[in-house]
Length: 232
Image (tube, rainbow, N blue to C red):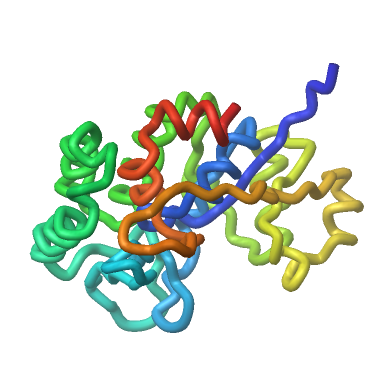
């Protein structure tokens, strides 16, 4: 029996896509990388997400206060609370006729209205709650707990060692920036989180839109169908 510990590590994204939860499901321990720099430009999913709006994948971005200099995710706060009503209204307008909208509306809207001091607290509350609903028995830890100051691959290795991990579960694009020789020296095996092709019926489109928030799957499939078809 393989008793090795699989560790997944990822920034606490905003209402992330199904692949994020598939990575959690494959991990024994999942570390939220919450004490790293908030990326202010480019592709940043800690404060934005894609949803199905009239059959098109569209970004919804949450406004945050931008400070001077380096700003960590666990130090980032919302600019205001107005976006919550707008986001709820957007979901209502685009998913009201989805088969599992009424069943899960209360839960999702409660998560939208969750009162958190920081962006990371808000995102982690959402991710942990959805994981509980999916019966994912992964242990969650925040990287900020360990106060590690190294960067890049060495930082990941130190985090994995802190939780007695043996296998690092990397994303598919991880090879672009990871130093594999350092994992080998640390006696850590690198595995890859590759979610199988998974499609379901979405409103207002005949062609499946991939990469949308898990909310899209919840409203269109429901938790029980997700558990029986993907997390099995």
